[in-house]
Image (cartoon, rainbow, N blue to C red; front, side):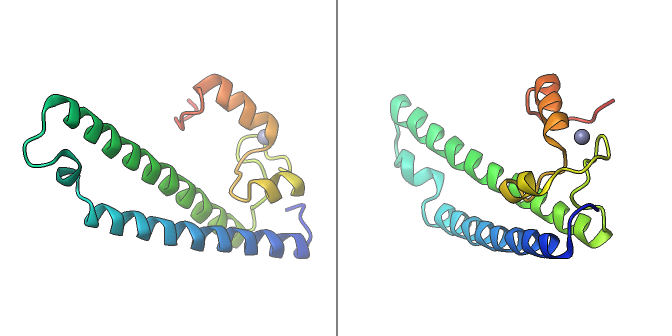
Length: 130
Ligand SMILES: [Zn+2]
């Protein structure tokens, strides 16, 4: 990898901090979901209007958690790449991702060019590149 020891250490530190913060958020989300289950928003005998608001609310909460979970998985993958020694190298083209980009997105697995190409091709959806 093209990163210096100091840079790699700093990025590793950022990943760990972000991972811990996310984990705390996910735990809070889980606790909140237990405290306020879906049925409580809708009430005991919801009319259709209340029900759709409640289901929208549930969907939003679900989406929040999904995004956090995705970021958490990306951070875990980045930790594995650090341990494997291939952190900071683009998984698509093999060139250096660059310290500045990694500082902004410590979980980045691709260089900016490959990331942009991927988002154009797949609309940001993570799909296998076959
Ligand atoms: Zn690349």
